[in-house]
Length: 551
Image 1 (cartoon, rainbow, N blue to C red):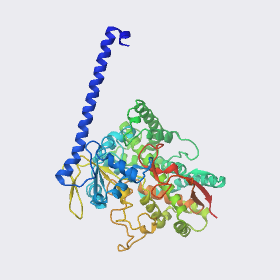
Image 2: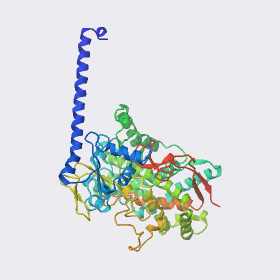
Image 3: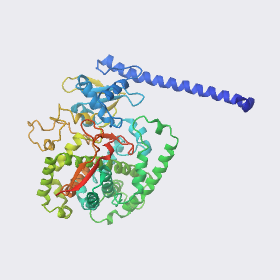
């Protein structure tokens, strides 16, 4: 081959081979230097502070421990990663019971602390709200929103954005949007009727995803996306882009030269879809009769803040760009986790007929026994949704057992420690990703009596001496503190509305094959869905189910 290239070609080839060799050596040197840094970070914490740790290998860190736990507890390949912390607690209770586990998974992930104690979680989310971990904005969501969305930004910029969007997500405003939401839920109910008449098996999470997309479209944009009846370009593009995001090491996406180009194309398409809604709302929001959408109220807040009432006609391009990024995260977060939760609620209604009877009795009491009249009754008085405490308890208990998000991740400054409230032991945090292991906490029997059982009544208890009374700071699927989920009231209103219009008419039966795999005692276990891309937990096989009319 070198002879065919000629003398000059041979010299060039020789230089190329040398260059590749040098680059390989540099890469290996960087790799081992990073490995040394990561491993020593843990060794110093262990040796200088006397912190107990899981068995730690200088070459593999805690990766061997994770492999051992995976095999021992038969964690399926598609099992959602947030449950690893739960199984580490089972395997190393003497360490987890101290409130914290240090976990070294480099180069697969970042140096991490998993926090198990609710009062220690409160120290970095409520008492002192630490910044979000840098990788969220600079790596994970960088291609999706530029790391400039309400979930990932920090400091004064976050406070301004949160203040701007708070009015739209208030309970009062969301209840005013209920009549619009009802239109979308009635389409959903009709889809259920068709499936029940056909007697076919459906993937229930697909159904709940479509309705939650349409509801968030009405609440945020004030438009009918109609994803329940046809393909929608905005959401189809967003789903395609979300598949490219990776929160764990993924060489297929990392090394694919087409991924950046695809992100650029998808971002342009989504922006072109959203900008007309923004401009139309900005120019006409004073003419909008009735309730205001989340975007409309955000624009109103912007105009009043700038005191430039001509801004309605000339919204600055940089503000539109930021607004598009916020809307993208709302559209994603506002449907993804809600859809999974709603599907699990239907699943649990089918598994627990006694609890389902209580929920339906509440609907009869609040809305009257005539199921056909429920939509008109709620449309006339949306505040009736606030008179459904058992429905709220049902939602809370579902989120306790099947939280779609495993917890918050934060970072600290040098010299920062977390302190165990009983022992007074101080744990250094600088250099680590601090993770509130909410999934583990929500199933911890130290805080939840009969933790593995479905007991909505625990959220109806008012006597603090009752064993079922929820432990302080222990229920946190939406996280707690100033950085809690801005959309949690939307989730609550939306799910109560959907249940009020469907739970009394239909029964749902899981339709997994008899030989379908089971994990943690359930065939409908939580997985990382490759069709979604991000690490939120979804239901195995998107919950195959039969929908039946109630007799």
